[in-house]
Amino acid sequence: MLNRLAGVLCPVSALPSRFGIGDFGATSRRFVDLLANHGFKAWQILPLNPLGYGHSPYQPFSSFALEELYVDLDALSEKGLLESVPSFGERNDRVDYEGIRLFKAPYLKRAYEEEMRRYPNCLVPFLSSHPWVPSWALFMMNKRKEGMRAWSLWSKDRQESILHPEASLSQDRPSYEYEVWLQKTLYEQWDALHNYAKERKVLIIGDVPFYVGFDSCDVWANQDNFLLNPQTKEPEWIAGVPPDYFSATGQRWGNPIYDWDVLEKRDFSFIINRLALNSLIYDVIRLDHFRAFDTYWKIPASCPTAVTGAWIEAPGYKLLDILLRDHPEISIIAEDLGDLRPEVLALRDHYGFPGMNVLEFTFHDEEIAHRPGYDKTNAVAYLGTHDNDPFRGFFEKLPEDERNAWLWALAQKGHDAGSPNERMINYAMALPANYAIFAVQDLLDLGSQSRLNVPGLINEVNWTWRLLDYATLEAVLPHYGDLIRKYHR
Image (spheres, rainbow, N blue to C red):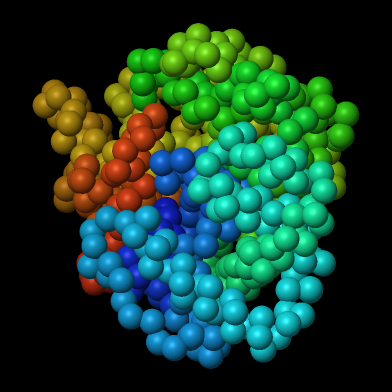
């Protein structure tokens, strides 16, 4: 882990591009250049896996595959696999996931057919080096044929095709190979982008969910790793968190719960393989919902909210011991938010993982109530994460007396110039935390209309915010470069 660095939190999907969504091509390289040129040394992104229910990157169809929307079509044109592709949705202020998917699909199919015509054996090296791909390609081939329905609703033959894949492939090998080609293309483009960031000395901080989505290849191909009803194949228990500051009824995520007894007998290989792969495609992993390595909230699937449930202990030490023994190179940030029991922090500190200091939650406690504990160097400071209101929106919603108390406390620390957002960025930069990560919306001083996600809601707004161009970001980054030098980051 590097000391004293500043970074930017921005999902790939939110970057400007000709096709209405960020991708692994020139638009991301431009973003990396902007960060590097102004002293930022890290880019934190959200999970890149195939988007599932509600466009959420935390309910993906796979822990290993990448989302096909992130293919750079211009790069395929440069390879000669496509003619030039017209723009689509370039000026839309929200990501139109379904529209973009329909637009890109025929171009992707055309590029696949052309590359397979030129290089019939081009998939062989990728298949041999990525052992997860065959089950994913079979899963996605079946899912498309079933109208994208959840795998538990497929015909019996397709549900059980994981047991006899060759029979399915003999009927439609081109559809299977198309899914393999998509992943080959995505990994090639991501690897090129990741290497570009390394050359520019910008770390990629990836986000790995603790749980997997039920409607995923992960569950379909590994059903005995989860607590499923043996007849219906549906989850008997699901994941979430009890009532907290986000929701009075808690968060009912719906992810299936692991069968920890089975996982432990297998040395936790399912989870460790997920983390090991992600350690190759990212420089640092942020482990989402880290507390579940200590205790997890187990909700009956029949419960409509997360109010009913129980905290169950997980074998976190056993799992992490094996992970770090076999993969000592993995660099981890622990997402340690929420009302935690002390054992969670003890687990984090046992392995020396930096935790998260989200100032929208902690600043009032630290600076106004004078609670200790946020002067750690081994930590990552944020104004807010992808689940928070941008700071401007958050601050404007506070009662006037609380806003005045925040400004008074900031002034006591010497941050009394500029907007509240500017003062908080200065405050976060000055903290001893080695990492200071800022959502791109906060760097742009945007309000609630730019919020990326409200936890627990499924709607047409979550996950859709995007930048239309880089002009406003280019205008403010020199100022932040000055702050980075001022605070020695």
